Length: 185
Image 1 (cartoon, rainbow, N blue to C red):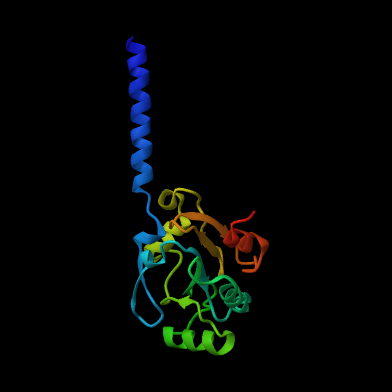
Image 2 (tube, helix red, strand yellow; image 1 turned 90 degrees about the vertical axis):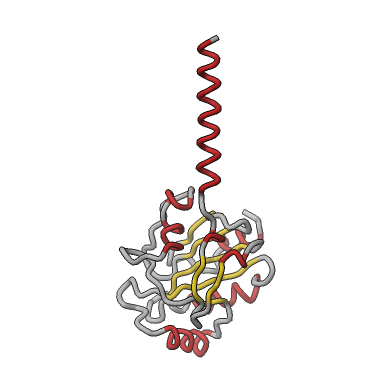
């Protein structure tokens, strides 16, 4: 009888611990950021949408991905999907501009209409909390995925949960990303 009671206590305790861990895990909706225009942006406003989060740079070999990101946004953006871009100067000083110059560059050269955010840091001691969540399994509950270079893409489901990452070399128009948006494998 004691063994059964002990086993039951362990099962209940483990379940309680797992429940408490999963309920304490953050989602995308727990973060607030600034738009490229300096306005507050509550990521909870994206509830119900799949979100592609991308760290960007204007002077990178991958900068032409802005065109494919915009194409992806035009194809699928709306009530069910969106893209948010975060300019960052963490790799090779490839985003030296101010928010105003970045916005002008994106608009003039790539016609970007998806939401661009204020310039941030995506790694190091000054990494913003959102990117800590995106890159650390202890925060997102799924996977460690440190940002390796500009244009790394994080896939967030319609419930605000971290579901995947696409590295810089992968086109925003890849089957991996478009099938995820469409809900097919």
